[in-house]
Image 1: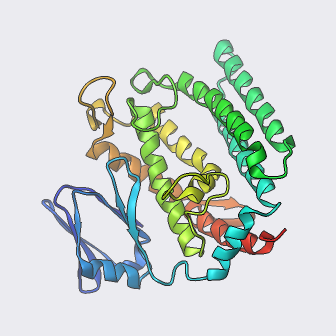
Image 2 (image 1 turned 30 degrees about the horizontal axis):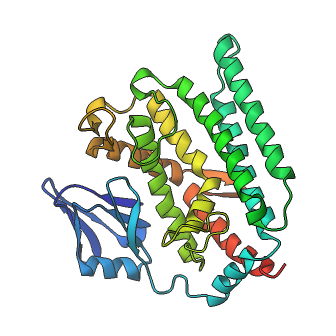
Amino acid sequence: MHLVINTYGATLQKENNLFVITTPEGKQTFPPAIVNSISISKSARITSDAIILAIKHQVEVLFVNDLGNPEGRVWSVQYGSISNIRKAQVNFLYSKASLPWVKGLIYQKLDSQVALLLTLHPEEDQQQLFNFFKSSINSIEDYKKKVKDVEGEFISDVAPTIRGWEGAAGKRYFQSIAKLMPASFSFDARDRQPAKDPFNALLNYAYGILYGKIEGALIKAGIDPYVGVFHRDDYNRPALVYDIIERYRTWMDYVVIQLCLAEAFPLEAFDQDKPDTALLLGPLAKRILIQSVNDYLGEIILLNGKSLSRTSHIDDDMHKLAKFFTQNASI
């Protein structure tokens, strides 16, 4: 279970070895055994006893901003204590194995985009839309081949080229998705920070939740989230999280797309001072999106021969990545 505390004036504290959330509406109690993580917004409070209870049970505590992005976290000192993994991670940056790893990462991202577009593909009787999707899929397939075939000795030799192909593929991908959106969730292009339309605001917030999940999984696996491979120039930012999230972005895309197609959010669920200014998710929109994301990440799926929740697959993948770094650091 992922506890989200974003009600103004809410307090998380410890009572009788239980987490207790107090809001103007009343109290709720949760045993630590069923809690995996806790997110707290700037409008809520947490006591030191509750933090220590979370640490004791290895429950990560994230402090998030209005966009859902983690600003800080508390975790057990047992996490990230394996120095040989982090040494191997740094050595991996300068090994010959790093470029194939990056190529595989971007290839997998584009492949997931194709798979999602195929899932959403309109019927052939919608000829114009059918042809648009087909053209977009073919275009992304071409970029997949280019990424697979590109050669270089170091990542820096081909990184600008790969980023260009990745961006061009992403443009076709989101153009196709935009064609499906109902009028209240229409958008012209991918708009990151700050978003000015509901679709992009929802997607940014969903990505923020995923950033937190991946950073926590990296820390628990003993990997430094600040030492990136493809994203290496972001000072004081968790660059490796930006690398790893590429494998899972379409999970959040799917959730947001389905919610928008169902028109699950009334327009009053969003806050915007005036047109062309930043649009933020209100409490209702956050509640619907967070619940939907957590339900999706908690769903058991068969992947790579293992039946696990999507969140557990991320944890498992990060432990595999730690092993991969140690095995390929000097190649």
